[in-house]
Length: 125
Image 1: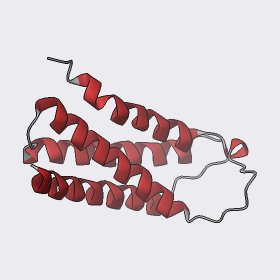
Image 2 (image 1 turned 45 degrees about the vertical axis):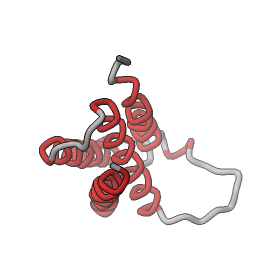
Image 3 (image 1 turned 60 degrees about the vertical axis):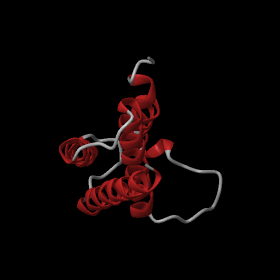
């Protein structure tokens, strides 16, 4: 049997990417392209995809649908990480600012990702 952590590697990598991207100094965020994207949409999509990766990585590792307790733990962990990142953005003087609406977008993305993951997994199982 393979190591179950191999299935979680994409979720772990994505979590580190979120941490890096959200705590990067504001001076390093300039894009050479002139694309206007809503900041809240980016937060929503990042946490939506992270929770989907967490869910399917864990369910694949154990080859079964996850129980509600583990789903709740992943969702609360994603919300806690999002809240801590927003607090760190507020606390650190790197040109970034913590925003409650960003934290709400993180929460909405995590919740939507968890619900979609459960529905998709039950349909495919």
